[in-house]
Figure 1 (cartoon, helix red, strand yellow):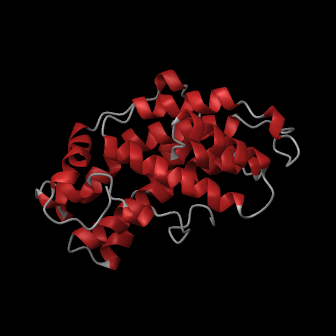
Figure 2: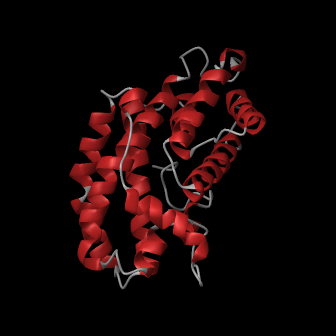
Figure 3: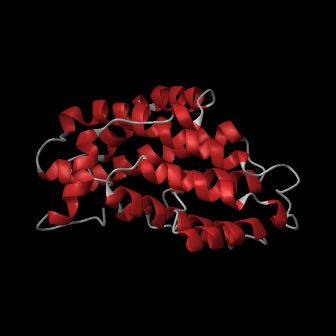
Length: 228
């Protein structure tokens, strides 16, 4: 709950991942927001949940100890982030995810002595690959000995909750309606997390071209509230 809290100081609140463009073009409105977020959960949410699980699986029980950083599979870590980058067509989406992921690992690393996290950050910096937020979330959860399925569900929930929060600043969306929408999406989040358990990286993909367009269009907006 702590790691998935929107109050965690990792900069997630500064990103809309294309939603600002969609609201500016009046494509995304209060009327279709819930259905849009449901599709987002089924598409992007599933993709991120699969990579969150893969990040979790990078760390074995022995490697989870603070003294076992030499066992960290840096090559697999880099490859995971490169593969997720390839599934994010929009530069702003890739950059935003990597920026949040890097800050997230630094924040968790400050909670204790975790050599694996330092090695993951160093490998990502050297390779220029990520670290994407979902993969970083799974890795950190494993190091902290948190359950894989719980990590995947928590990540999906915080992702959707973050977008709802962004929409409260972009649309005439009150707290009551935002709470109702988030509550109604709980079954979709659970289904997404459960489905991700049976997916491999080769199965993981998402198709939301309008959202990708929104992210690509974002730098051209005259005024912006968000970084992405």
